[in-house]
Image 1: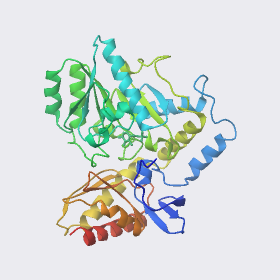
Image 2 (image 1 turned 90 degrees about the vertical axis):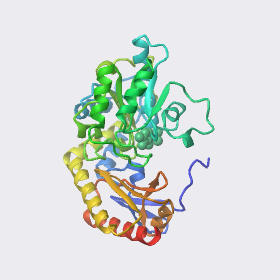
Image 3 (image 1 turned 30 degrees about the vertical axis):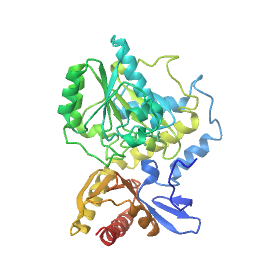
Length: 385
Ligand SMILES: *Cc1c(COP(=O)(O)O)cnc(C)c1O
């Protein structure tokens, strides 16, 4: 079905941050399959893990023990400070689990009609539940009746949260992205997540973070919430967790960790041998090569280099980044740059109509960084006038 407006290119192979098309033209990938291939394409450690696992077992279902899944849960909990994990196959599914946890939490507290506070300009997925939580009317258009029980407030506005809490006595959880990805690479104030944590503690609400895009080293830490030294009650992951093998996870802690019991939730494929082995190889590689620090340093470097290259462009509003989640906001629409960059051999993305979003593979090297900055800044200077 025509669910995507596809660009006129088909890739046939990749290596690291490079991709090649059917005509053997080479492209620099500054999008990583939308924050999925954080370790780049055709990574030998992922290849080896998948190929080795496929020689013994791919899938047996969650009716039986799955050793790599148990290892993965243990490692994710160690890295995040969470207590347990539910595995599924996508970001939307991970968020569905979080929404179900919040509702169970409310009902356990005796709240019959529990509501979840969510953010305007957020993105949580395309299922009926997650698109109802999403704060973007375009994504919801045509799909009413939406799932009820979501209240949208402004992002990065702690007062808006406090005021809304005064107006409703059925709110049981806050659910938000630490940095809004699809909404335009919106990075909140430094202490925003700390304030959200405090509000949740004071009002006995679950703090639930959608780290589907920010998680797994993208922002220069394993999880974006670690920049704030807090721990959420629920944290969802997907995109980069399998470096391209579909896997999602909903991590939970404390009072949120034991609400989904046998019969309350499930997934046929979730956390099977193949996906769990791929994710274990991802975690091992990030640890061994100190990729969190690399992402932090390279993100800063790209921001500095872009700022220098674009310093005379009067349409530049802001260049912002947290690690390798980078937004270049212009004061005019710039969606045409996606096609122009493609022709120039560079893959980028534009969100929110006027923000160029870069999500390069975290393993990008310094020559590739220079090529990225050079190609992109020239395109912007040429076409944004
Ligand atoms: C991509 C994304 C999702 C949806 O993930 P899918 O795997 O496409 O279902 C949810 N939340 C955020 C923050 C995302 O970036």
